[in-house]
Image (cartoon, rainbow, N blue to C red; front, side, top):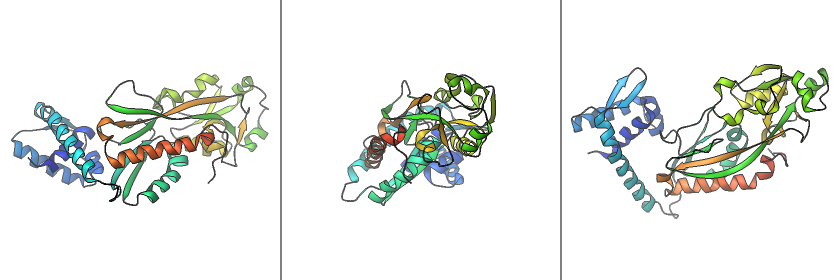
Length: 301
């Protein structure tokens, strides 16, 4: 049996779509289809059911899956033994992260990781949803929600604070804000409730629902841009908003929200050198950035 074909089988079983598997493997979707057909022909059985929504495993496919995963683990062990510090790290690491943290913190920080390991490739996925480790959408995920179970390594990466922000122009044109009670009559820029990917983003429920939310978005960076343009008050991460000269804090420290970023990685990846190096680097950067994350220092760009 061709191990290479099994790699395609595993990625399609996890992604459920040719395009997802192709992106993960760095090939064209027609290559994935051809490899799956070759594997099915060699085994003389159908491994996937094709439908308009994607690919799902047949009974034969489900029986093959644990055997293929065992082979994958064995090949990972071979890779770990082969990759020595002298040769340096190489290969691809895919990191899933929330949009704000990915754009404002990780993107510039990862330049240092690339400098340390020139042969290492990083895919940074900033998506307004929880990426699925079980489907191998990412190797390492930084998320607001700590999973209760699963074959993952989990660590608390960092706490961070959010505060109220608005543009000086907005504040000059609207009623003064002296207390939390005054906020109810002001317009807010916020998330779209039914499209939230984490309950940790329900800030307005803690604050008390304002009477008017004129602009909503799934993107925290769009919310920041809208607030800076005078659309309303926004609850923003201090690591992003404090560095924006178009914004100022509202009510100072009286209104503050604290959240936690968790970092996850599938257990079977922990021994791969490039994964471990990236994991340790992300923890190192989080520790050195603590003051910025808590709004005690302003991010220097």
